[in-house]
Image 1 (cartoon, rainbow, N blue to C red):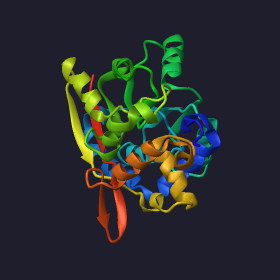
Image 2: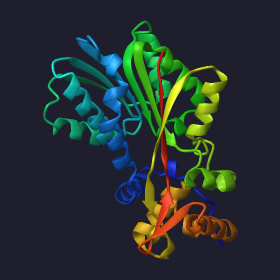
Image 3: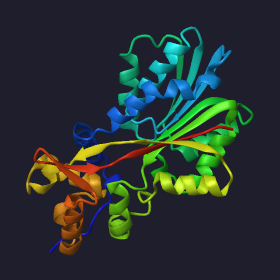
Image 4: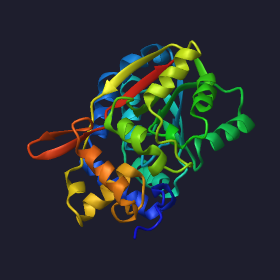
Length: 292
């Protein structure tokens, strides 16, 4: 008899184990790094002109690798400009990892970090109380809007903080990726109310279009190697399966019909491709860039 399913987001230790395994078999960070290095400087070109200071907010900083890649690109084009960066991350373990990474990274002398252990919604209240009139040059939300109760309102508030030439960058899973198909079919059975994992870039684009807000969009091809998920008892495969479904010990806690349906979908050509004997799950990302 299966046990009740528990959301992965409610088990901090298991979540971080799953996160580490997913990082090892996914190409999404490489895809984001490529975009940051090749596209971001051009996107920010007008924002960077004539700056003596540059104000950045990172919402959902995680363990900080992507943030430091962004800051590295900023330092290349603004070598003599002081950068003030608010790092916003609700997870204490992740924020501590981020601080360790920053402390061990050279060439950040001109970057002033402010650490905020809170959600984007909590930081919004903090910002309103602290400095409601201050404007920002660059805000990024990377894979974090799933955790917001009202993603559209979050986007609207942070866009309102931009300077005239400022930019808001959002990265979410593409509406056409395997994640989206998994969530559309099994989302009601898998995911708990504290997460909006059915959210994709397509939802945000519909909101922006309805509001008449212009944006640029970029698709970032990305995959997760899910081969080990089909090996019962494989520790990494079990952790990765939990990450994909957002359920603790999915293989043993999910009802048989749900488990069979999810496993079939993960292996189906609608979601995955077979390359050299490996099963690669489509987890394409989409970048949305907004101005003021």
